[in-house]
Image (cartoon, rainbow, N blue to C red; front, side, top):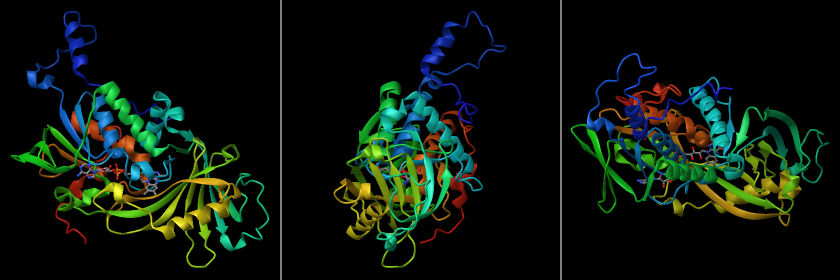
Length: 417
Ligand SMILES: Cc1cc2nc3c(=O)[nH]c(=O)nc-3n(C[C@H](O)[C@H](O)[C@H](O)COP(=O)(O)OP(=O)(O)OC[C@H]3O[C@@H](n4cnc5c(N)ncnc54)[C@H](O)[C@@H]3O)c2cc1C
C-alpha cells in the first residue's frame, strides 16, 4: 500500500557522516566526491519544538530521527489537551477531494508503519476497525424500531439507517494520549530528544533569523530553528496571531468502562442523534477501544480558551447529554452497566479557512508553524511531523506537498475577528 511507497529519506546523522569517512579510501558507488564540509555542517541542527501535543511530538520525533538535536518545550504536560482527550479515529480517504487529501492519506499510512515499528496494537491501542453510520431517536427507546440484523449485538438501542462508512482497510484508531506519549518516549530513548517543561514566551529573532526561544522566567534556549506547534494557543501567541487567526472550538467527551468489555466489538459509530426534547439532530461519535473502554464525543461550541490547559472543564449539561447518548445506544453503556472513567473537554485548533497552517513564517528565517488541524490532528500528526522535519533539515518536504498549507497565504490578507 501507500505506506511502503512513501519511504522517508535516509536518516542524516553525525554517525552516518562518520561511517562515510571510514569508507573514503575505497569508494564503491560514488561517482563524484561529496562537496567539502565545514565543521559547522557537521553540527546537528538545534531545533526547539514548542508544544507537546501530537503535532509537536510527531515533529520532534521525525526531526530527531533525521539527526537534528531537538528540545521539546511544553508548558503543562505532554498530551494534556486535545491530543490526550480526542477520539483517535483515523481515516484513509475521508478527506479525499479536499485540500487535506494527500496529507491524510500519507498520514494514515505512516500511522500503520509506526504501529508496526512500535507494536502500536499493544503500546497505544492501534487497530483497524469497521465504521458505521446510524440514526438514533431517543424517544424510540421504549419501543425500538425492528432491529437490523447487521447491527453489532451491543448496539441494542433504537437505531435505524445502518450504513457502513469505513472498513478495516480504510479506518483505524489509536488511543491518542498513549500514541503521543509512546512516540515521545521513542524520540527520547532512540534519538535523544530533550523535554523541557516551561511556557514559551517569545521567539528571539536577530536580523530576520531565529536564534532562540525565551521561556517564562527568562530561560533562553538557543536554536537554529523553532517550530511553533501550540494548538489552539497559537491564537494567543503574538508572532502568530498577528499573521492569522487560530481559535479554539470546545468539544466534550466521556470515557466509559463497561462491565462486559468483551461484548463490545470494534465498530466505530457516527450517529445522527435526535434528542427526546426535539431540536436539531446532534452528531456524537462512539469509539470502543481495545483497552476495554468506550469513548464518546460531541457537543461543541466556540468559547474563550483558558490560558491553562489543566483548567479546561466540561459543561455539566453537555456531559449529561453524552451519558444519555451512551445509554440510549447500548444497554452495556448505561448507568450500573458501565463505570464513568472520565468526563472532559478540550479545544480543536481551527483556522478561518479550515485548512492547517504548516510551514515557515514569512519574514522570520528558521521559524516554522504547524497548527490548525481541527478535527484531524491525530490522523494528520505523523505526515505533518515528517514533512516539517524534511522542510527544516533538507529544505523541502517530499513525504507530502505542504505548499497549500503555508502561512504565506495570509500575507496581505486582513485578519478576521
Ligand atoms: C473531542 C475531540 C475529538 C477529536 N477526535 C479526533 C479524532 O478522532 N481523530 C483526529 O485525527 N483528531 C481528532 N481531534 C482533533 C485532534 O485532537 C487535534 O487536532 C489535535 O490534538 C491538535 O494537536 P496539537 O498538537 O495541534 O494541539 P494540542 O493537543 O492542543 O497541543 C498543544 C500543546 O501546546 C502546549 N502549549 C500551548 N502554548 C504553549 C506555550 N506558550 N509554551 C509551551 N507549550 C505550549 C499546550 O499545553 C498543549 O499541550 C479531536 C479533537 C477533539 C476536541
